[in-house]
Image 1: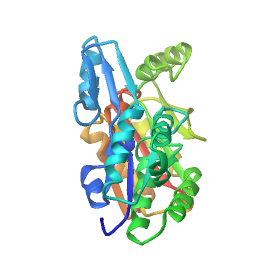
Image 2: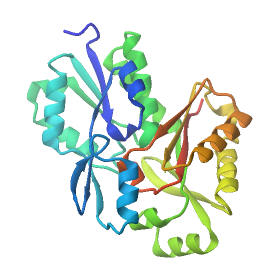
Image 3: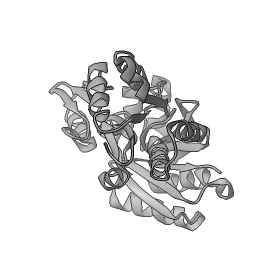
Amino acid sequence: MAENKICVTTDCVCDLPDEMLKKNNIDLIYFYIETDSGRFKDVDEITAQNIFDYLESGGEKSITEAPPADEFLSFFTEKLRTYDQVIHISTSSRLSKSVEYATQAVERMGEDGKRIHIVDSWHITTGIGHMALRAAEMVRGGAGCAQIITEIESMRDRISTSFMADNADYLYRNGKVSKRAHQICSFFRIHPVLGMEGGYLKLKSFQIGNYEKSAVKYIRSELKNYKKIKSDRLFITHAGCRTSDIRLAKMEVNHIMKFNEVIVTKASATVSSNSGPRTFGLLYIME
């Protein structure tokens, strides 16, 4: 039996870098992307750039799917061979069937299912990552399952998950904005800003003008209440951004507020296929 008997797991759309996952002993279950060419396991078999290249070259079908209950069942069963209990932090149930399928798996596990704890994050991408890292930190500190779950569930309303897309093309393709909104964004060079609210992905605002100036305005808007933001860690999570885009974002963030860590991560294919290239977000925790 492992010295630490609680295992923290999450969905691959947490977008945490491999080194952070290994350091914190966080394991992943993988989503799928179905295209005209087949069904691929996210991260392992397909990347965000693969999706962009495929769609830009005329591909049409791009469907993201949570792993089925059978895979959750195998995943959890394997973990219980080493650990006493598993805390699985899942993608928001308002956006994905991850919670539903994980729960179905637990219900099929009988008494062993009582050792699996499913937490609905209400977030996507590194919004989930913040919760997983806090859970792992508490495991190392010797906290029990109930204490950890109470803590990370209390974080849900304090995590800010938002992003600015270059345009509304992918959002329209995947039904996230209306045809009318898409037309307006295209005509006026509008960059949509979306954010998570109560587990739902909602259109927050627009930035108008060239990409660089819009990116700066988005960052300033997101960090305007910087005195109420925890300074521990900020994720800049992006899909297909240029090196210059990330450099600009980091410079502007550092100009406004000093974080202990500013971590740049790449979005998974699942997240990127819904946002499009040159999308980036700021993800942090409020006090």
